[in-house]
Length: 372
Ligand code: GDD
Ligand code: MN
Image 1 (tube, rainbow, N blue to C red):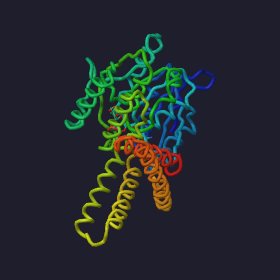
Image 2 (spheres, rainbow, N blue to C red; image 1 turned 30 degrees about the vertical axis):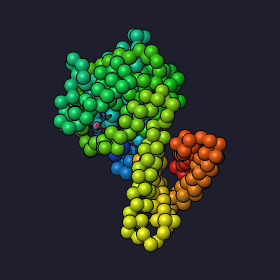
Image 3 (cartoon, rainbow, N blue to C red; image 1 turned 180 degrees about the vertical axis):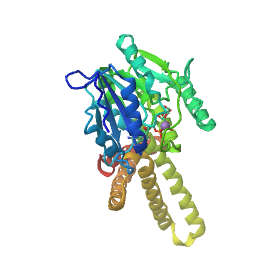
Image 4 (tube, rainbow, N blue to C red; image 1 turned 45 degrees about the vertical axis):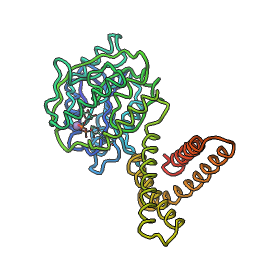
């Protein structure tokens, strides 16, 4: 199948617009969306960049098959990584066009508003145009009642907490000047679904326009939204609240660490009650061991979800995690004891030790255990 159209050849014409499409298992939607882009973008020199996270259903193949005869269709296949925001970031970074759009693959985003969005950007009045379901002319009735509630709640939180002017910051449908994006790229987070929110709050004084559209139903396949994505969203909001000082990934790591402390103490208590004769050292060893395993599994499932370890790597990772954890614990205890000896209160000494311990564990985990 070929979609190369006669009146908008890319060759010999500078590409004006790159449409970036993150995909995971979207094979059945590829041909239809490209066909619709071709129909709606007549007169515009465009290209489409699919960023596929090695979908098992062969989405990348479907895109490349079309790309073989249509040079406007490209596919960036990422192996060993997962994540909507990260995929969008890499797709945009691979573009050389002055304008870039991001939209979902499943045809829920109405592609016919793309020319209007481009016009708004070309007028020079805006750096970014967000497509919105929540202003006059927009519509989100195809969302389930539950999903609609979640989306509206998340929208309220972000508007209140982060003060964004976007009426639909949860949308994954927008267009912007590539130069603006290039400048802010180092400050963006690859975690989670909320790329637009991250972008809109990454630079002060961004000139933001809006484009109403009607949110459609999925053409083929199923949604990848889940609870974890909701939690990742909270991580992003918290990170933004600290002025970007704290990485969302670190917030996850710290939350997991806090649950680990609870597990550690809970098991210690249980072991002492069930087997008082075994002695404190044994109970504490078991409790710490279980807490280590708990932390490792949770970090592997949530904090470093996009770099998840599997098979042998999982065992190797756990051993490394315990070794670095042991060094972290020694540092924590050493520092706290030193401070205590030098007349700090137990609270200050204990806290300082814990903070340095957590930072150490986080740095080692990111650099050596779940490294990219
Ligand atoms: N590369 C990559 N990696 N793409 C992904 C991943 C991933 O891990 N997860 C999801 N995607 C792609 C999907 O293939 C799809 O093209 C797009 O991201 C959106 O995913 P959906 O699973 O269709 O999400 P949704 O419809 O429930 O919600 C989306 O649309 C809403 C309205 O714009 C999201 O974009 C929400 O953030 C948004 O509010
Ligand atoms: Mn969708």
